[in-house]
Length: 247
Image (cartoon, rainbow, N blue to C red; front, side, top):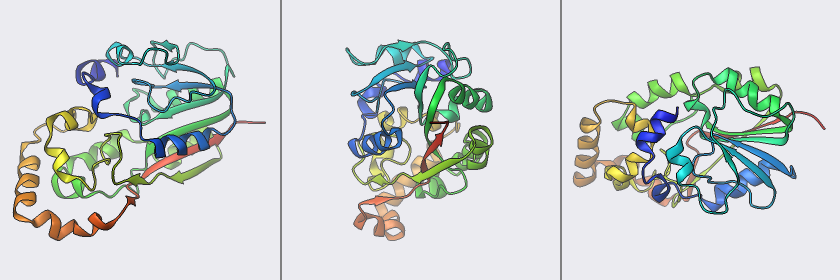
């Protein structure tokens, strides 16, 4: 969806800074694979620095935000990767599958170009529970059910998989939808919302923002969710999916 990120991607890297704990989990999922294609790479968060990486990104706005010296990038779609079969030891896709115009075709492409391993960070629509969605923006739930692949869908394309929960730390530096679960005031910031693609998909967000603002001011949010303020990390349904392609 290059048009989406060409429009909302301005200043994206101010809010979407890689979190080292999430980065470590992704590196563990990649194992020792020494060549990686990062599909839907965005501005380059979480690309390993200790092995050969090629990035694939459709949005020129996101490509412009890649750091100097980062991995070489090809402007292309996940649904039509310009590489031969088995060109890389591993294929990586981080919080991107839900944006692909044809998920099955994109997943098939990942499996085609990866000789040994496919690693995907996604959210499981069957297990994601989050106060922001449940209390203030329930439309996100319906959007998630439409755009997020189920675990069964992933397995149907990729075959046998390992699925690991990805815990979200309370001070997560990567501002995806669930990152501010213990910092509710952050969702009132237009810059924070601008780096979260789902807010651009739900139409009128003002009623939800007004309820959140009121609940924070009158103490309703803390009465409902104050127990979260004592937690260091939570499971919001984010999952690392690892499919082994061969030896």
